[in-house]
Amino acid sequence: MRANCWMGTQRVEVRDVPDPQILNERDCIVKITSTAICGSDLHLYNGFMPTMEKGDILGHEFMGEVVECGRAVKNLKVGDRVVVPFTISCGVCNACRAEAFSCCENSNPIPQVSEAVVGHPLCGFFGYSRLTGGFAGGQAEYARVPYADVGPLKIENGFTDEQVLFLSDILPTGYMAAEMCDIQPGDFVAVWGAGPVGLFAMASAKLLGAERVVAIDRFDYRLQRAVARAGATDVINYEQLDGTTVVDALKELTGGRGPDKCIDAVGMEAHAPGLAYAYDRTKQALKLEIDRPIAVREAIMACRSGGTVSIIGVYGGMVDKFPLGSLMNRAITIKTGQTHVPRYMKPLLGRIERGEIDPTMVISHILPLADAPKGYDMFVNKMDGCEKVVLKA
Image (cartoon, rainbow, N blue to C red; front, side):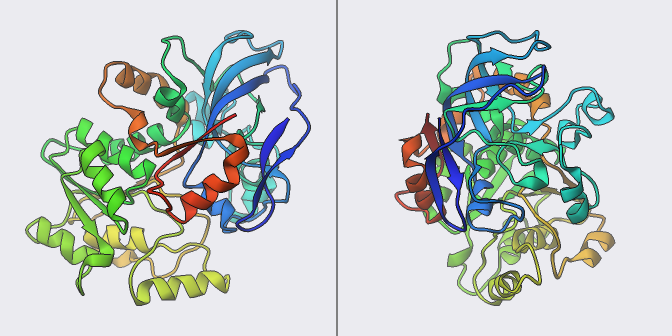
């Protein structure tokens, strides 16, 4: 089969690779019809996530048709159309029984790798390095889906791939980011990052009752989409602040108090004008710091006292100049985590069916799988108004 493979920093190739096989009676094989490039795939593309090896198949957002099932998979059959969550969850461990699916204790077959980096095993993910199990990803013609009796969601309502594909990751991720904020009617919510996850976080914040939502980014076309498609009421382009800071701009919008809830939908590759970016980028390049935590620093410093900061952007390890004093002394609550995707898939499918949210709002480009390298180049360099690339296998 053909698959998009990581071949080094900022180098991917669509190559011939062996077809996946059933390895466990709880596996199934999915013939992929649609997949996508996630913002977190760019962390792999840019070489910031360790334990990648040349030839690794990328991609953790995908859907398609079941073409083979293991003997223990009773909930699916050949021909079913499914969306596959990016988290691989066994369904029987303590975490899975508590619906904390991204904390699954059994799905990572090489737990010692992540134990060495973050202290405990990480859940298995598709296409996301050996930290998360080294599973082949879904930017391919076929994929093996472990624990297929737990994660995949059958699609039986006739919706197009584009309407439901993002139930695999970014729609539940944006929704969980907003849900973790415990949004109350009238709340002012600030969202760092107007990429696809940020847009879904904004739309979800509005669904959950936020009165005002401010989008923070450096690209005008993204901010325009945030207003037009995701319900943002205010925008801040931090490269056009003319000497002031994002924190000052947010205080001005909120009468000096700061946003009630702040969402970091940026993660480890944040940008900023001036010395803040230069400091973190230099330390990251010298491998003295894994992440550039500019967005989360700003979120903590901007949030009103007693407010909540929700971190859904991906981080890989250690950060510098973390404002712990502001966090502690002002009673800021931090909530974070990889998304417990299966918990959200059915409820969000219901919201799509009722017309409460339109996932297609984030799509800017649809390309064939063979053009995956072009898609990565467009996404990382923000060419041609690129917001979200869907690949057709």
